[in-house]
Image (cartoon, rainbow, N blue to C red):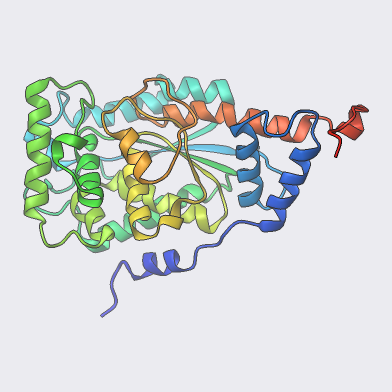
Length: 336
């Protein structure tokens, strides 16, 4: 019998790769620019990465920050000092232009779209039941792909959802192993007793769904949330449209981790914008072989760290496209 996840698996089985000709062209240009080879470090790698996925000269002309918001039944377990209603209030703040992500987007000339995902209907409490059924999870992943509808040339992912660091910790624990205490963190600022409740909630969730967590898509639907499913869909949709992706922090990367567990090549078009101060984000990035562009001690979410990293990406593109070559500048190149 067909499964709602069949279409997702088909997309994973047919992911496009890099444009080898564009990558070669970018490397040849880098070798001709007026600088010692490799002297711009990761800026050179970023320019080549963009060229390889965009299929030509790298560009950041239409970057989009997509923030997905969802609510979680696990909040009933006391895993956050804030009520679920704060999710809706923060979405309103995004829409009014009053959040940190709004200021960062203005600074770097980034478009911002906020996607509300049935905020009045929290997902199931993962300590006792699946967060979503398979059909709803697959449909939410498909909805996340709609973030590509406007044709961005760089997709920056962010999220909002009270309780979602608990959900992310459960996903990481199921996918990468270890104890709940190794994955939970302070989130929105819980105290020690709250931290213990988070670990207990993750432990209870893993026990409740034990025997059903071998398939990463089952991990997503049972332990995840709507915003996490939507971001996983957005990442996969971006791959098929050859749009590079900048990942934000702990929660965004849990969506990426699901795809990585399905196929380690699924994140080849993604860069980690930053490493969060949230306890286990650095470990998650190591598990997925992603080196962050920034490390600023941030743990806000909203896409804020990844949006800041767009400044670095834009600088990489400007250097690659705007610098003179040795021939143009009349500067002697390196002798053979």
